[in-house]
Image (cartoon, rainbow, N blue to C red; front, side, top):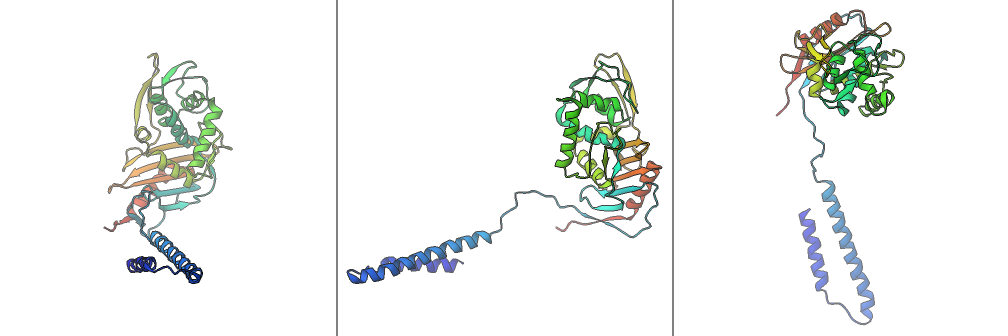
Length: 322
């Protein structure tokens, strides 16, 4: 390519040195002269474009390279759940799947998204006011008018799965509960969770709160990137109170697997229609993270343990080439 550019420069110099004819010959030679110069210009531009199109340009998008998980052949576990999935958190490779794209009611695992939306707006020491008492399902028993720190409401919602905490987060949001739910669905679309829909912040509306095991695993993976969320769902016990110090609550995490064999999250769920639901994260001995989801299960903890044991005992990672 450099040789071609040298030839073009040489041709230009020769043409410029050419003695321009006078008289009648001027009308004949000058047009030829102009054509030759134009041809040289076109070739020069083409060569520059060729050089640019073949130039290796670093990508502006940064992406990490992860070791690839390989699952050896083993007897797959028989689980009571109608659907389940195990995903390697780094590579997002699916290691086990049973009906991963079927729609199911998600019950209180809805609160994973509730937490994400709330954490994007509130600060840890924001004070929120309880606007509604007597919410159905699992509650802390907050009184109307009580003032609670945001961080304590998060613990109440994610550990014992308090519905009154979830509702308080939504009702204090600008525009109220409806605006909060709209934001939950906006988040779902922005995260490409196209098979997920939310109708309330607690997950009580079975016919309208739905997702798939695959979407739920992806949502959990995204939520765990938030250090505050990850820390809370790994907490077994917490004491919280209202800001006036009138009421104190001792709360416990409902996840029975928490702390066993590397399990460090994430969220339980149950309604009569949804059945037992569980989203679980596990840190393996070699530092990898697994995310398991079981939906419409008869025994969510046993099903999850079966899946995690099966994957952990048959999993290897291909090394990253240097």
